[in-house]
Amino acid sequence: MADLRTFDLNLLIAFDLLMKERNVSRAAEKMFISQSAMSHVLQRLRQQLEDPLLVKTPAGMTPTPRALSLVAPVAAVLKEVEGLIRAPAPFDPANCRRAFNLAATDYVEALLLPKLAPHIARQAPGVDIHFKRTSSRFPLNALEQGEIDLILGFEVMLNPPKHLHCERLFDDYMVCVARIGHPLVNAGLTLEDYIDLPHILVSRTGASTGQVDSWLAEHGRERRVALTVSHFLSASLIVAQTDMVMAFPKRTAEQFAQTLPLQLAPLPLDLPHYDTVMIWHPLQDQDPANCWLRAEIRAACAALDH
DNA sequence: GGACCGTGCTCATACGTAGG
DNA sequence: CCTACGTATGAGCACGGTCC
Image (cartoon, helix red, strand yellow):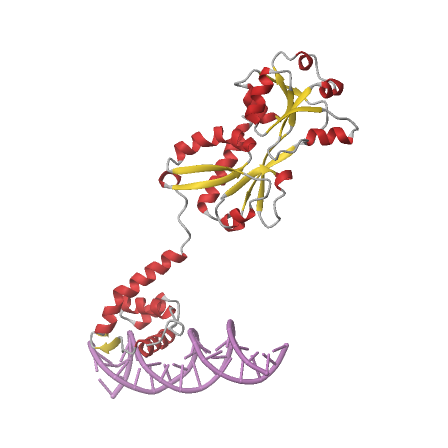
């Protein structure tokens, strides 16, 4: 008996058909080859399996006991192989039990989760979502090893490697946030007014200057950062109770202003808009579960503007 | 890139058997 | 005995892989 390296597995398909048809010509037709070719195949099967397999009798081609004993196992093997090569079943969120790990900034988390979480809880009750805070270093290893399914954040900060898939989700820009009733902001904010105010800087990395300071430095100006904090939430609570102001992404500022006594005003400086992107590994591109989650995130982002 | 080799196909035909 | 049907066999060809 030959080993698998030399055994032509296509012979098993022919065997299956020959045993179903018990007729070389009809089996050949089913395999879209000539009768002669199928006869050659049968000859090879006989050599490989060291058994006549089908014997010509007055009743037609009659299987040997060895052939009969192989019918069920060969059919089972072929069915299994067919299952292996068939396209994967579409993702079924309603019956899926798994967890997704997303690396994201607190900005994305605060903005997206209120839209995303209720929808996922309804559509996919067995799916768990774990947001993990991104460090300043791009979590490439975690993404490549499958520990993280998606990365969400500002494109300009992440600067994703070219071989990864990167999709723009929405853009945003900075506004000035102050407490409701703030006298200067109420009156309309000039650059001079803005610079004179005490500022809160939100810095996850601990840096003492931000995008605003860079812009001011380019224009020969400077502001006073009176307080540096690491979270948007604590910054918002402080701004709501003091005359300090902060530069804040407009979308989250609007969100916080719904529950805190905060108002938004245009910044008296010209900062660029920035894109929030979704990044995934090419290995996950065709994965039905990952495709589904990306579609859910897209839908949640589309709902942000409504 | 060309020579060589193995594999699997088709074509033509031989062979075996059953039925008229 | 002839014919029809189904299977087996050998020659030739195309194709892909390996080696130099």
